[in-house]
Length: 167
Image (cartoon, rainbow, N blue to C red):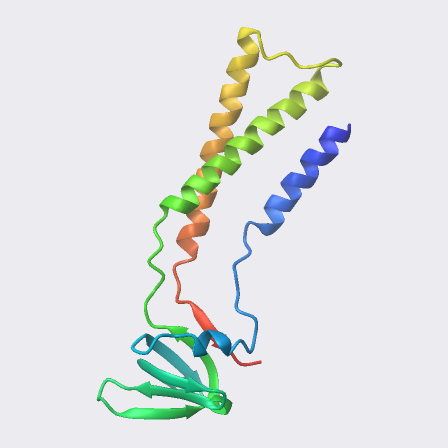
């Protein structure tokens, strides 16, 4: 019974955190200050206007942006609602798929061990022919589902990186 509670806890944790994305805490100006000059950024201003250009520099009071016309503009921090990278995230699906595959296979194998132990009153022996086939099937099914989930989560994370967002 203890193993079943552990299994349910792990599955609940994975389901609860599967849709979370890394977000920039509001007011993190340090990410803007650490940008390299020449990085293309998008700036959303408080009135709702959008500016795009190359980052030239920053200070605690604002940023210097070079627009496509070549004109440099200083934008006060008090007017900035959001700063994000102009380039979209170029992350390929491979790493999310591989992470999902490994996590899914491990979860499939762990669930097989838990359910096999619950079904039988004694210890589980994987030495018989039927035990190995169920173990392999659990790893394959779990790995396949995990790979699909990992690829889906990675595909959903294709947006621009938010560097700063006003409170």
